[in-house]
Length: 159
Image (spheres, rainbow, N blue to C red):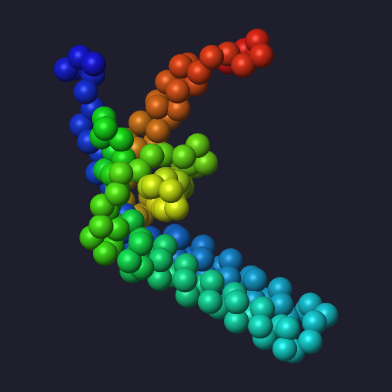
């Protein structure tokens, strides 16, 4: 690749997102509210409520506050691929999965690091610098378009 086409590594360090916090609280609150009118016994309803509260605690710890040892503290995208660093300080080489979502207000990076690790990075406009989020979305869309062009045309269908 020519010198003019080399891309500078893109370093992403997600921070705490108020939007993600609000979404997590809202969805878990609605899940708890749905339990009230269900025709279930108090024990069953209590167990389901406990599961929803456990899910809330895990989501806050691992995805919103990024305090779990396996939470992604930094993701670097270079020409060699992705490298992730967890909150515990461990680094892994990773590859981007096709289930990655790229939207205007939300980017979810689904990565695979090794056989069993599948870290995800949820990015909202308030979790990283808006310019950095714009560059990430542009690179992801460009790499997806390049990959689509490189794939052979399946069964004669237009690309």
